[in-house]
Amino acid sequence: MGVFTRMKKECILLDPKVKDKEQLLRQMTLLLAEHEGAAQPDQLYEDIMKREEMGSTCLGKGCAVPHARTEALDRTVIAAARLTPPMKLDSPDDQPVSLIFLMAGPTASAGLHLKILSKLVRLLNEEPFREQLLAAPDEEAFYQLLCDKESNYG
Amino acid sequence: MKLLVFILNNEEYLEEVLEVYIEAGVTGATIIDSEGMGRFLTYEVPLFAGFKDFMKGNKPYNKTILSVVRDDATVQQLKRLLDGKIGGFDNPGTGIMFTLPVDWAVGLVPEDEEV
Image 1 (cartoon, one colour):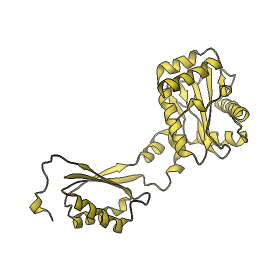
Image 2: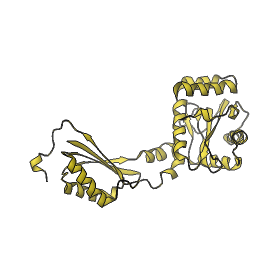
Image 3: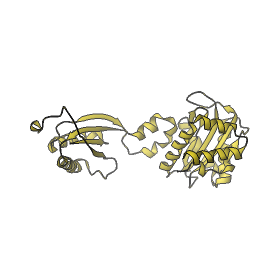
C-alpha cells in the first residue's frame, strides 16, 4: 500500500512563510485543491480543523500528521510541508515541528485512512529519513526522497 | 488436547457463556479482562482520536476465556450451544473463538473428576 506514491510533487511546500498552524493548513489545503482536485477546499479545511480540535496530531520528533476524513474528497490525498524555522505546536515531547504531512480522504475510507496514517508514522519515526527531508535542497529532492523511501523499504 | 480461546465481545453474556461451558463439559477456565485494539487506539493515542466514529458499535472491553479441552467433540458441542445462546459467530460483535493444539499440560482437572 503506497503512501508517498499517492503524492504529487506539486503538493510539497518547502519553507513557506506562515505565522501559525491555521495559515499553514490553509495553504496546504489550497495545494490539494489546486493539484488534487479537492472541489471544496473550505469544507476540507474545516474538517481538518475540526479534527485538530479533537486532539493533537503531532507525533513528536518534530513531525505532525494532521488529517481528516471528509465529504470533500473521493480519494485519499497527501500534501507535505517543511517549516524553517520549526513551529511550536502541541507536541507530546514539546519539540517544535518542522515536518508536516497533511492527509485527507473520504469519510467512508476509514480503514485505508488508518493504514496510511500508521505507515506514515512508522516512516517518520526513522531519524535518518527525517534528517534527509530536513536537508533536501528543493521540492524535487524532497519528493525524490519520499519516492526512494517507499521503493526501498515499502 | 486443545487450548480453547474465546474472546467474548459482549461481557453481559459472560454468566450464560460459562453455564454453557459447564453444560458442554468444560469445567475449568480462566477469564481475563481484555480490551479491543480499536478502543485503545482511538481513546488513548491522540493521533487516532478521529476514528472514534469508525469504532461505533464495537464493545470497548471484552473478556478472554481460556480453557483446555480434551477433544474436538467438546469444542463442537460448545460452539453449537453458544450459537443458540448468544447468537452466531457470523454476527459482527459476537466474538472470536479458536483452538490451538496443546502437546503437554499439568495441573488439569483429572478426566474422571470432570463433570
